[in-house]
Length: 544
Ligand code: C2E
Ligand code: CA
Ligand code: CA
Image 1 (cartoon, rainbow, N blue to C red):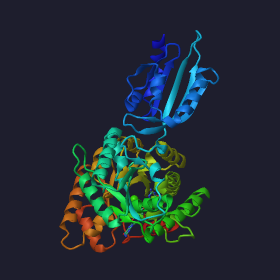
Image 2 (image 1 turned 180 degrees about the vertical axis):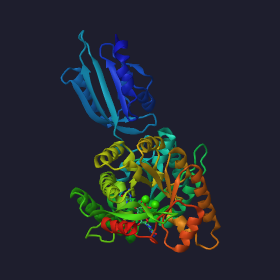
Image 3 (image 1 turned 90 degrees about the horizontal axis):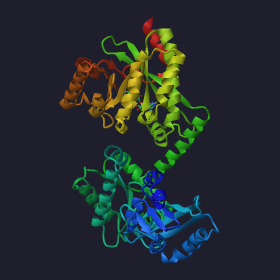
Image 4 (image 1 turned 90 degrees about the vertical axis):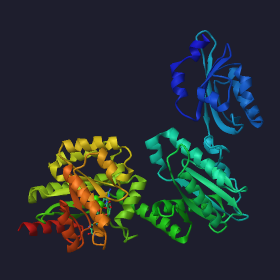
């Protein structure tokens, strides 16, 4: 009988649901209970099946919490209550107490005796020690008194941790976290403290330490991370503050460190940034901008506009295409650049909404111009995160049908493709578009954002060579850039991929680019991005 209740498929699937959820069932008549494997492992129990578990589990409970626990559980067993629900601390196999929220209830059986079943959730954000690395948690750090004394603090984050997790798996990601925790402890001074925050972030607190000391520490850590046995090389970034200079309470210091870490990750050069007035200003500006952006989106995309930049056939030097480029004006911050506000939209996920608007506007103009002027192609930019679900592609196909746009003259440019982790998904989604005749371009080829890797996995129609490369062509003695572009163009020709050179500003560069055999030309030499009516004037002028 007991076996039937305790051997249950539902139990099996529940038991594997999550790392920090522990479950048990107990046959109340025989007092035989079953505990999920992770419970046995984490709390060091004698086995999956335990007789008289009540008393044994009691030994794990913190002495201060036992009375509370007993009262709650006795109410269930005496029949006074049908539910057990309380929070208490329990000792794990490392002899650390962790906070648990325990909820259980009695399920009455047919023959009078019932089953007691429950779920214990580990409340990690209240725990003193992080269960994975056994470091102190951020919760513990909040208790530290920063209002007296002085010292320095380093906030570390693993670069591209999401990518590590996605490409090598969750378990591998955990190994990286554990290795970094060990490394931090190895290099820290005797009086320093190391904490693990959520995700891939760690703190090193150095009471009486200096920023200079932590900088040295950071260097040693990064050197070490390139060469850990059994792990691929990885690197960390850091934000650095000192107290009382940069704050005297946890929240201020924490947010100043977060902004510095963000800055360090963007700069990418040193990978470490000390909190400064400049960082504080940048953050302030970003939050103003973000607020104004959200307001614009909410007000029916007020202030957003598409500009169009002509793209010429390299042989005829006639306009055959245009790239749609997003503009946004706000009186609050009139000098906000597309790079700036698009990054904010990407970070907040609002680029999805704005992206739908861009796509519709671009298609609307494409429909108009195809009717009026023949086959002018229109391209528009799409960030990887816009493609994470199929909705974008569905809407694009539907909208193009509705507006009767010929898909062969519509091109999607994938920007910042470095973030493209799921190339299989991309390949599938782009495949759907290509079957219908839409064209796909890889933007910014030659930068860290886009390179050969993606080209191998995803079929592209067009490759846009980044401006940095194009402009580099006239630097004296720059044979390398020249050779690289030549071989890229050559490779594309063999793969039937067309090429666009971006950022052509002078006749000299134009001539070099044409001699290499690039298919299309784009740049200020021909025109800056302009509003729709101005672009129309340009086409009309050319056609007359
Ligand atoms: P991008 O896709 O590489 O666009 C080309 C950028 O180069 C544009 O900057 C354009 O104005 C600029 N440009 C073109 N020719 C020249 C030239 O000869 N010299 C110089 N110095 N610059 C030239 P813009 O409009 O500021 O856009 C910046 C970036 O913002 C774009 O780079 C693209 O990555 C992103 N972006 C723009 N519109 C959208 C959009 O609707 N959606 C998304 N996701 N990203 C967009
Ligand atoms: Ca582009
Ligand atoms: Ca580009």
